[in-house]
Length: 195
Figure 1 (cartoon, rainbow, N blue to C red):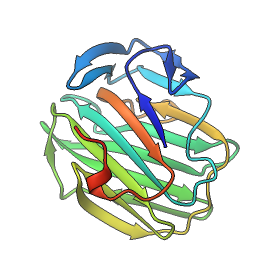
Figure 2: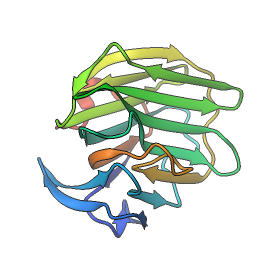
Figure 3: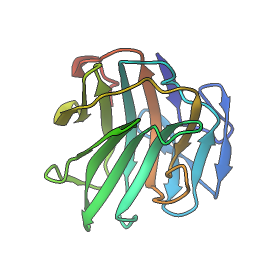
């Protein structure tokens, strides 16, 4: 298990950060968080904690804010030298509402859990989780499963992490992130991070 507190602009989980733009450290429920302005702000790390895992749980404590881009990537983990990756995204289809979109690409296989019928208000803190059990990916919001789908998956090799934007620096996130936790194995909702 690797727990990343996103509460400063120097290191995350013991790894140095490259900062883009001007994200800000803010007070948040349960601690501090980093706020991203929706254009140009991100944290980049030359590592990701899912290397070699064939089952995993990724959790994020975050707050999507109003008036951000329609499509926002707020957590992106990608293998070096390939397109294999994992993404957490928000979509803002109407003012004041958002939904969760999670994505895995592994070789020729990819799938998005595009939860367009599960709308939530912006400006509140949420817990999102993506679980892969060796056969099926499923995502949860505040402990409630929204979508699931089977996908063939080969464990990721070494790579990088981008927080607040997609790795190629498009789809910037407007909101705040307090914590990201990576678990080697499948967690049930009762074992998720508490808000």
